[in-house]
Length: 328
Image 1 (cartoon, rainbow, N blue to C red):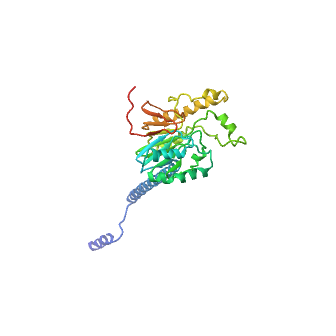
Image 2: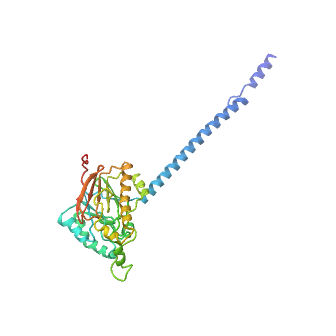
Image 3: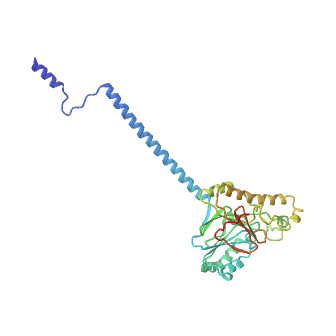
């Protein structure tokens, strides 16, 4: 009998290498643990997928932003000069820059009223070809933005796009000498009624002298996109904010007598500049300098911590390191 019990006990032991036996409770606990592990792995996978999608979207957004911004970099420039209206005197401008003042390694920005559109495109290409060697030997560059006496298409379409001689669209950012310079063109022609009457597209005589879309535009989206990549310290415009000189352009009242909407349009022009100024200040751009032309006089003053400079026709002014405006 004892022998039979021993044999039964031996036969009921698990054989070496045989799979272990589990109770229903043990199986349930094991399955729950495995499900928890799988759920954790799935959650990690979803988070990783979400992160990848987010990074991909961010990259696409960054690439899209790059495509919408107009930026121009001049790493070799050692000096920056801002120039007032030139009214088509391109040869005189280049002579003054390269020969008279003998400037080298210099970026020159023309603050509008360059004179583009009064002649066909080929005229300006020939003009550049005649002066290209002079700019190259001096290692100088000229960037031009629109005024009210320019065809806007020369700038919006960048019809002049040579390395050392180019037009740029509104809300372009020029980088040189550690500066981020915002360029916004446009202004109102106070003699627009006369120009329209004598423009070649409105009469049988005369040359092109007036273009629709001459006014400056406040583009908040462009400023917002710029602010995602740059901190603007310098602004170059054709006209000026309302709190700068000149308060009124010479001859305005006489022309307004013939143009009922002129005064309101001129007020809006200056308010557009006010909006740009306020946006940059509110959004903490380190604004130090603001240059403009248009009024054919010279003046400068510190206002609200910014040095404003009005440039006369063909006047050169160097962008120098900022000296804090004295307290009022």
